Image 1 (cartoon, rainbow over the protein chains, first blue to last red):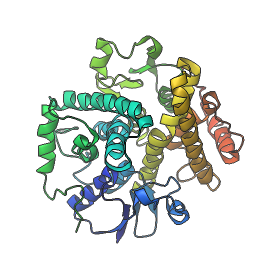
Image 2: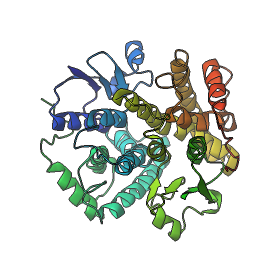
Image 3: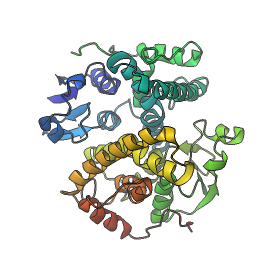
Image 4: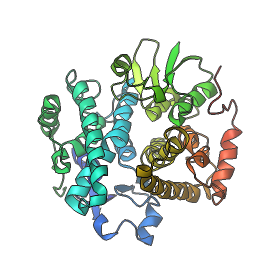
Length: 203
Length: 203
């Protein structure tokens, strides 16, 4: 059986839990508490030298880190990943955008506010992350004004990757009220068959 | 003909220039000076709402941003991208690592030191980026001690993506001397047929 090393509040882990659930693939969830350093132990660093979750362990023991690479591995040759070379590249385009322009701002703001606290030294950095996070949301809003989903008018792993931290952006101090197209898209994603909530324990 | 919107010192742009050159694909280079705001003009934001280079324009006018998505588009079905699902996911794994754990630290440190200057407000942030950048280099070093290239013992777009900013990491204040396996890998990448230097004008 597949094993997923994960932390339930993690949006990056949630992407994988959601796709596994929608694909109907059973998996064993191994929970690690990142707040207690459980992803930085010598034993875990042997599994993932970069010390992060999620980490997927295949049935033969192969270890695959990086949420968006795991999504690709699971979704290829399924309806969650398109067939044409251009559409595939566009899915990866939005997943790269998510990891570079969206997650480091929106997820980090949420993590600071919800989990580690906004110390005085973090205040200026938080304001900058909120500015850049709003800019990323504006890019999504502009695209979704003309599209139902991110690529090819079909729900794909690009939507899963971007849904993960967008639907909890308010926990990072982001006001989604100005982003009507994003709100409508969030509802479409939530209405997909076998949807799973972020902290719902799968299975 | 393919058109590449790019800025010659950009490592992200360099990835695409290097692969296009190694594939023998002719392209028109359209240079934009990011230091003069040329990627933030209304005309350019119509092409890429995220306001970044590189941006690939296909022959039919389709616009594809995000360096690693462009690499995928160009490399799929060529020797620069493997065939098996797992090896493909591992290539994407290292490209996700590059965009999340490597580039924001190593490329940004280089950009500050070489182009925009290290203001007093940036000093603490620079030290943190150099700490995280060294951690990313240590992850690469650990992998390369047991491997010739990042995936499947063959040169792929994972190597191109990681070479781009690693080989100029000294410009960001990183000392590569402790990383002997990285140095040997950099030399192997440089020895690939049709290699191109970062600021060499292609063609």
